[in-house]
Amino acid sequence: MSSVLTGITTNGSPHLGNYVGAMRPAIELSKRSKSYIFLADYHSLIKQQSPELTHQSTLSIAAAWIACGLDLENTIFYRQSSIPQIMELNWILTSITPKGLMNRAHAYKAIQDTTDGQDKDKNVQMGLFNYPILMSSDILIFNADLIPVGSDQKQHIEMTRDIANKFNLTYGSFFNLPQPLINETSSYLPGLDGNKMSKSYSNCIDLFAEEKKLQKQINKIKTDSLEPGVRKPTDSTIYKYFKCFTSVENIEIIDHYFEEGMGWGDLKKELFKLINTELAPAREKYFNLINNPRHVEDLLLEGETKALKVASKNLKKIRSLVGIRPL
Ligand code: TRP
Image 1 (cartoon, protein in one colour):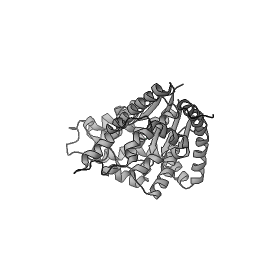
Image 2 (tube, rainbow, N blue to C red):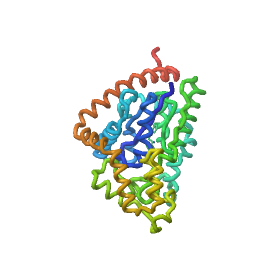
Image 3 (cartoon, helix red, strand yellow):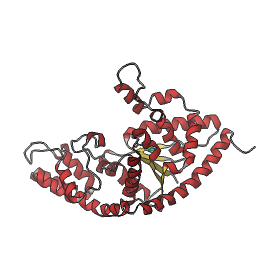
Image 4 (spheres, rainbow, N blue to C red):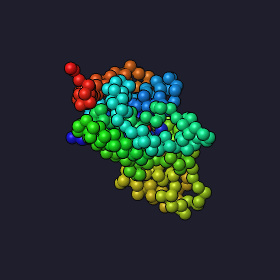
């Protein structure tokens, strides 16, 4: 049976775009396949250095995934930092990864492109440069096959395949070559302004905003000034939101609203009802978990015990293949 693995960096708390694009599909998948889902807390240290944020965000993201219904029977749910074998493999892979491969990483090149002047590496930490190797270690230590990620992460999975291949050729075949599982566009939720939803664009809806705040945020979704009835539903950001929260059978009802010429204000009220109905039960669970971090800690420890078993068994074989074994 193939195994699924994905990681979430612990930078802040999840927004509605994360829920639709990553959490909801991965949680569905976790009901059908063996899954590894982890909090990439070591990766988060590259993006921000606030100990408080890292700690708080670990609780918030763990609680959010559990509250949204992650299947903890089928899923091994853990913190990256609790599995030291990932870091050991990271060094073994660093030792065989060509620097030229890392030079080609989009995230690294993007920072270089924004840096004026002589030193293109001025704002680049080694953690950022090596980011794809740590990500490869996350995946390869469990020999995972399917990696659900956003399209921005596709290159990292290709690099993981390159690195795995290099290892297999150097030391003997051990690693599977993982496949990315890119979310289809139907599960893509734009931000309030129609661009990609992202904290850095301040166009997010909080996943667990209280009802009043949720309605307020929904009211901010950008609309045009076309007369009702003239608008083509598929062009509007609101319609894209409806599509993400309406079942295929019910989408006709929504199309009807648009054809009838329902005003933006009323459409936003309907949209609020839909989103709120889906999220209200999870919201309550989320706040219960946030107020009971000990329970979240225990659930993570259970996952970590299971993950450690697999990781230590695999690392033992990997170390032996590279020649690090008892005399
Ligand atoms: N880089 C991923 C992101 O920013 C997070 C991540 C870290 C990850 N390690 C991973 C995703 C391993 C999939 C597999 O979204």
